[in-house]
Length: 80
Image (cartoon, rainbow, N blue to C red):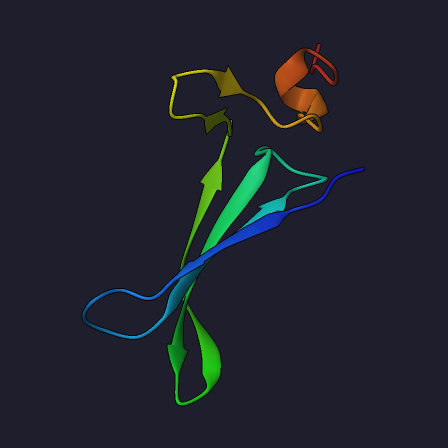
């Protein structure tokens, strides 16, 4: 399954913010990172960045890639 995930926080100064990481099932990039801020009780998109890779790093330094890696990045679809 290809699920995205969200990180949400409230900074000391400024509005609540969140990053939404969405897998890109088609295209050149594996993920999109979309940034939002809370403005008058509505989430407003303030930026987007496309990512080739994504991994999780724990406090002990172990790195794990999400289980749903993009086929293009794993040597799948290649243009010959």
